[in-house]
Image 1 (cartoon, rainbow, N blue to C red):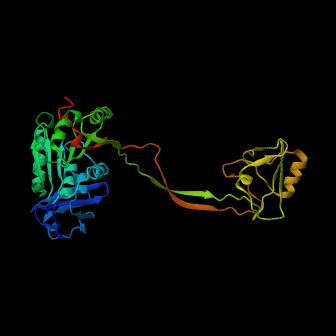
Image 2: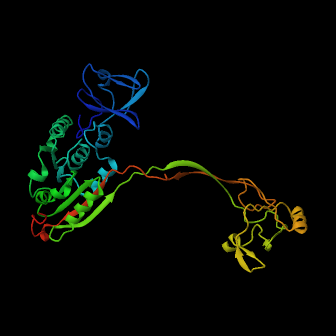
Image 3: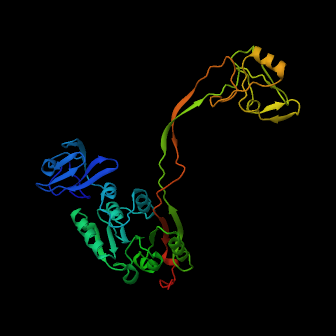
Amino acid sequence: MGFDTSRSNVAYNDLVIVFMGHDSMLPVTVKQGEITQTKFGALKHNELVGHEFGAKFNCTKGWVYILQPTPELWTTTLPHRTQILYAPDIAMITFQLELKPGSVVCESGTGSGSLSHAIIRTVAPTGHLHTVEFNQDRYEKAGVEFENHGLSKNVTIYHRDVINDGFPVENAADAVFLDIPRPDEALPQAAKALKSSGGRICSFSPCIEQTQRFCALLRRPGSGFRDVETIEIVRKSHNVKRVNIPVADIGLGNPEVKQHVLSDKGPLNYAYETGDDLAIGHVIVRTNQEAGKPCKPPKRQKVENVDSQESNSEASGNVQQKKGPEDKGYTAPSATKFGYSFRTCIAPKEIYGHTGYLTFASYCPEVCLDLDWCQ
């Protein structure tokens, strides 16, 4: 079974994904008589044959899941020969290039084949991928993988330098993807590979200087490219955290109780009662009666009770202070202390995970005057 077929049960020579956790997966090709060691014990291949995909498989020290291979699972488990593209970037590339079954795509920089598998799955069964790899060792290994995964009918890999030799096809591609150190030098070759009716182009560059040169070349008059856009995809994980928030008491539980507090600047009147129809400004802004201007109340000010408050106010004119982190504001004597407890998402202070910049553009050959415009 390959990436282009589906079956309910495992058979010999099948590529399966051994799932031991979300951050621990292993690709295994089922061979007769072989054994694969995992952190949960030995995995005997003969016992895998006939096992249902997606079901648990008991090992000597635990259990694992046996999953069918998909481009997404292959991206997380493939052997890295180069830096690869991951699911967020791959999803944006296939969407922005407007790929669909039957599309013809040219790719420069096969690398480890992460994006190649996703493109083949998208353009199958009638589309085709022409992928070019400059490195001999990576070219040979990628070709073997395509053959073993049953994808050879939808992909052709070439060992060549796309800058000097160009793509193997001309006027045939619906989309071109460039993942090379100098994408601006390969732009004329990409324009020749695209169909005369137009198409889309994408360049992946980890360096902003490469992206700037590529965008400047795309925007030159007579280039034939329009709608230039650069996107950076950064993965941001939110942490789930339980938060307790006390409910503010903006009124008095007892309607007969009035709060009259004196400060060194004059009396501050807090005659808020439960059920009073008060505007927001009356709640959060308090009036200094001497100055006649709004002022913020002093911090950690606490109203005790009517009797002690009046006696303290008459004797010293000072306001009772409360120290400690538990003081959350003004609380009426008869108010009940309660709050909300809920789970929320907390964004990280710093965001990691930059992989590169994706530059997209549309090719309009009717406005392209000369394919040698960037020479």
